[in-house]
Image 1 (tube, helix red, strand yellow):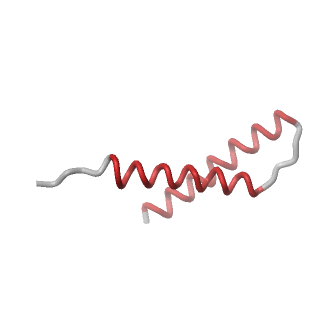
Image 2 (cartoon, one colour):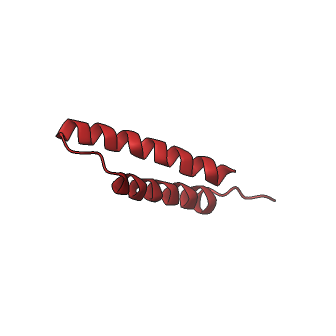
Length: 58
């Protein structure tokens, strides 16, 4: 379930960033860069969360 929410919020945040930046530039909003940015955010968060910040149990 945590992967679902990670991907969901990555898509939402990517959409908001892309919307603001394309509106400021006066360009058309396209979906492909949004999903590429969301994939990058998701992979980064998953790698950091599961790999680097993994809790050590004794």
